[in-house]
Image (cartoon, rainbow, N blue to C red; front, side, top):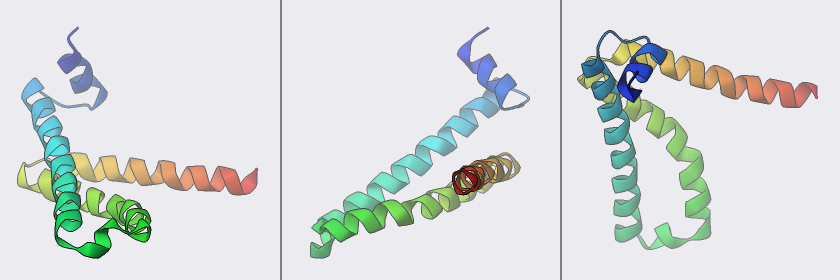
Length: 102
């Protein structure tokens, strides 16, 4: 079984073409985040401050997830990425719940 077929099965997609679309959405989202950081660091003096780095990493998570949904919508895979986001945030909430209870 090829890695593409493995991803197709894991993500419950119908074709290898859909796997490539999902990978393209992830790639575009990551590239967008990198380009925005590069733009901010290149055009604003305060972007080199330590607080900017910490703020950026806190704020990039919701922005990344929003961009994932936007690109998913553009490429017709919104439902896939919406389910992906729900699983992702359920895991994060679950991590916080287990740490509280420990």
